Amino acid sequence: GAGVSQSPSNKVTEKGKDVELRCDPISGHTALYWYRQSLGQGLEFLIYFQGNSAPDKSGLPSDRFSAERTGGSVSTLTIQRTQQEDSAVYLCASTLLRDTQYFGPGTRLTVL
Amino acid sequence: AQKVTQAQTEISVVEKEDVTLDCVYETRDTTYYLFWYKQPPSGELVFLIRRNSFDEQNEISGRYSWNFQKSTSSFNFTITASQVVDSAVYFCALSELRQLTFGSGTQLTVLP
Image 1 (cartoon, each protein chain N blue to C red):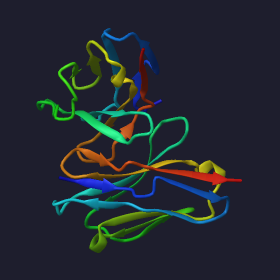
Image 2: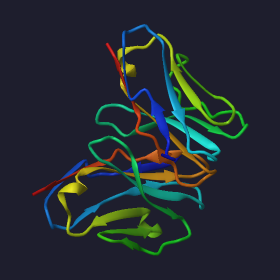
Image 3: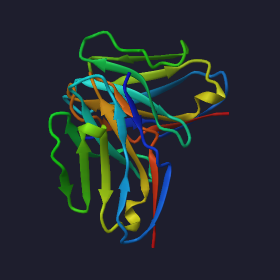
């Protein structure tokens, strides 16, 4: 389909391991966002990419979190040395400038 | 800083009842967008509506209607003749420059 896709849909990892989460935005969308949704909570902004501009990393909770966007399209969110409190659903969204954000199905991360 | 408040954590209604979900926002910007998203049990966030700050006309889409009042900084969402399939978490969100700030969500349960 033409929507935002994310992979994997589920990821179980052991504490201390690194994980990579992938987001494929809607073709042509210039902006890409990552959010985190902990159990029963609202959405927490993590990072924002807009075109070739420097990303807005103001929402990243620690230096264990990083993200990149290659070729203005696909993005990877990396969590190093995962902790149990990192367990959450990680959501990606894409948009044209300030238009409506369309969300992917999310990656459910479980850190044991 | 922008803030979105959804005071109703959980609402339970019987099918065919009308229900209104409240959303109050805070912003210092004069140009902003307001959104409602639905998150069914499957987890994917579904876009419902977007309003810009200059358009205070109420909107109706089928059983859904939205009431935007700048004077009270509110953007309430009403479902008429609710159905079991409306059961979900509903999020109100505010966008200024580029970030979406979400409320904490309202869990709506529609009982048969």
